[in-house]
Length: 122
Image (tube, rainbow, N blue to C red; front, side, top):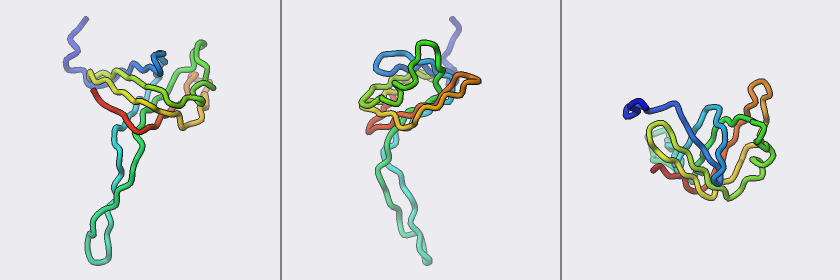
């Protein structure tokens, strides 16, 4: 196999509770736990406000013959593990699905997004 030491992007192998899923594209994740917004007044910048933000993992999934789309909608307290091209392993524990899957039949794809309290990069 060729040298992949410079590979930074392009692949994502994803499993949900140990079951591999077919990732069609748009793998996205965020380990961030807060969102900040700058507070300004008429006289100057006053500071910022900070609120909790859920971590998330999302992707477009291929609806293969072995996939049961309705099961994605039922997912709560699942562990998502993703191995991405740059060598990182992304792990989300205790995640829950937040989008209602809508299958696009032309390409047999649907979007899924899991949110939770913790997503780590290893």
